[in-house]
Amino acid sequence: MREADRLAISDVLIDYCRFLDAMDLEAIARLFTRDCIVDYGEHALLRSNGADALALSLQRMWRWARTSHHLSNIRIWFDGPHAAHSVSYVLAWHERPDGSTATILGQYQDGFTLTENGWLISQRKMFCNGNDAGFSVPIHFFERRKPPQGWTPPQIDSR
Amino acid sequence: MREADRLAISDVLIDYCRFLDAMDLEAIARLFTRDCIVDYGEHALLRSNGADALALSLQRMWRWARTSHHLSNIRIWFDGPHAAHSVSYVLAWHERPDGSTATILGQYQDGFTLTENGWLISQRKMFCNGNDAGFSVPIHFFERRKPPQGWTPPQIDSR
Amino acid sequence: MREADRLAISDVLIDYCRFLDAMDLEAIARLFTRDCIVDYGEHALLRSNGADALALSLQRMWRWARTSHHLSNIRIWFDGPHAAHSVSYVLAWHERPDGSTATILGQYQDGFTLTENGWLISQRKMFCNGNDAGFSVPIHFFERRKPPQGWTPPQIDSR
Image (cartoon, rainbow over all chains, first blue to last red; front, side, top):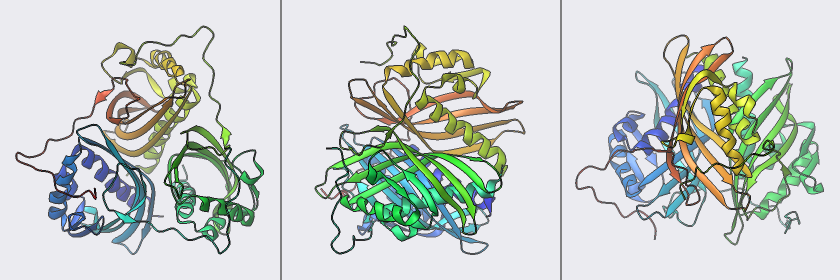
């Protein structure tokens, strides 16, 4: 089960959220490998090659006045002694200086490498499960399966 | 503390959420025992006996266009070498094809059995801690304790 | 990594949320040391010395009709064999008897002591990352770093 490795990887995923809400971008860069590939969406500004480029790119988060990134549903699989991948969910709340807000419910799909500095994120791709009307960043869309042919909705809601 | 068993049970709870958002109902069925009892509320459509019946029943989730189930507050207790029970919280966001949304904040109270296929959910009951105006599925209501006789609210909010 | 200690501390953090939503204040008192210091904000009603005073103070939560406290992002560090500290995130939803709601997205910064009754919270300070318009309790404000001189926002949102 590699409990210690799982906890170490969890800690990295959580630190990303904490450091982002604190806008400690130097600390965020240290969570990723030097040659990491990060891909939040098709837009050029949503893609980074390398930890330093990522930290620079995440300066975009200063366009929000406050943020809160709540990480849950952490699943980790090992691909060998020095490699792992994970899926985790995030509820990310953002507030603009004018007080309006934007929330995304999404998932990170990450690759990890065990380095001399511990487990680091070597690959990250983000998908959007859902979002409110205030959120308009074009994150990758998460695809669910389609209903079978001829499926009709049951009457279950109380109104 | 049985750390490995706790992680295995956590994984099942999380997989349920992930598979539901992906509408992979075959994968959901494999998380439950063949004879599981699942009870989300009084409505007949909210109750299932057996993993196959549950998977069939969860086809109802296709009436939403998108969902995101965020699991947290996982507590696990062991009742012997092959039995456990848990409480976990879920923030479940749902969007209709017309773009309107429904959110429930609830808790799963589950029983687990260790089988030859690992830890599986043998019993599930869901309770609603809270919900927004858009959510109208009649999930079991979570009861909190009542205030003592004569209790009066303090003035603490800033408005 | 002290996996068992980490799980035990996690359990205390989660139980606080569960017991608060159930308004089981006697059970909450047993999660804190007798001489704990709890500080949710500057307001006198938001500060408590000792587990009994805390339980009494939390009677204020009865002014809500329903609550749901979702804990995530749990990070734990050990400061010796009998001491630890943690940061954890909470999404706390509250509903008034009139049906209006208030949500805070915040973080607990806690100190723990290992006692003969297990790991207990000896110090708690709460910070507000964000909140909706309905939430007006003056919780400590979480400060993020400021942008560098001359920073200008990129055009990344799709509207």
